[in-house]
Length: 474
Image (cartoon, rainbow, N blue to C red; front, side, top):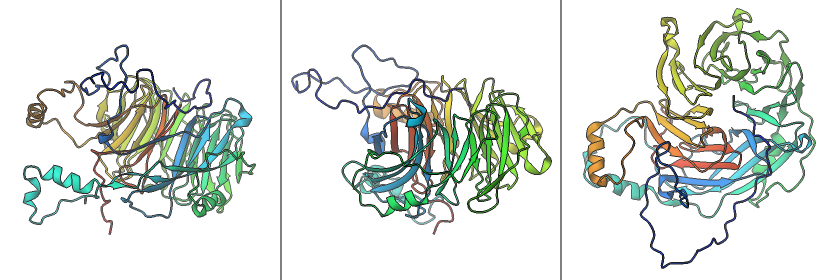
């Protein structure tokens, strides 16, 4: 399992000053080459340069101590937002050098600028739009729909709440986003009400506040110490507000039932079915009583809370620790899992009874998978992060097209030649962060991903990801 950041040190801004040889315009520039992850190696003196044209938006920031986990907080700014500049709210927990220095940050990131692209409908128009496929139409349309939105750097405002111990994982409730649950390395699970902080940030002016003010002491709504060890697995139900499951490194899973908006009853009789640490939990997006778990024992278990404390189904999922899970909320039969051996798999749960439910298996990453999440706007798309410092985006609906590849090679005159074994489902590779830990899609801003690593956060919107209007959206 790969989770904690070893010997974390306070993040420092990269020196953006001049470097040796800067300003020597007489030195001819070398031709730009496309980096092939896992294939190309950096020679001495070479360094990777980001291609801004690959992104509609790309920003980086840090908050002091590294954050192992964060969550995007749903807001009231609009369900489907496409206009720059954007604003996002999220919560994150620190991994500080001393336990007493830790905190939970409540953040508002505003003035997120980028290139404007129109949202596309999920179904193609049946009108007379044959001219859209004509030569040059794509580039013309792109130039019209890629106007700059906003300018300058994003403005980060934050408030901090003191937290005892490092934050292993933090999650905000979807239905009541001001309610958040945190897993501490002290072995405690705590539930917090951050409504006052979120309201203050929403009403505040956009003056940058990098969090120089000390963390305030706030009592949690609940502090549960029934787990016998620390843990990382935690998930709020997307179906029942306030329903929560938490799993620990001693194989135990506990069910939390809300008794009011601010109180919970935790069943002290745990769910036990794994033989090693429970690494992640995911509620079914449609079933009230069903959730999934994954473990260091290599297994995934499906649980029904009505059927006692043993799993309804359990199966070998990977040949190593299963670190993370994601249950597709747009196609509820699909479950994705990522392993310590760098592989990730997609399962169709309808095929469990037949014995082999794997519909896709990828061995692209060579280091542990640290996060995996389905897109909230496109059922076939998911994002994956790995300890190889890559964040990859995949579209399972894509297939290899020999004619299209041949045409592409002819247009580029072989200057760009992808590896033969590169999966056709691989849409995008994002690099530049060190020790990637967690990623989340923004459910209200199509195409936006936020990721956290040992050296801070990235906000990215790849230019080749269509910003799809959710079906049924007015």
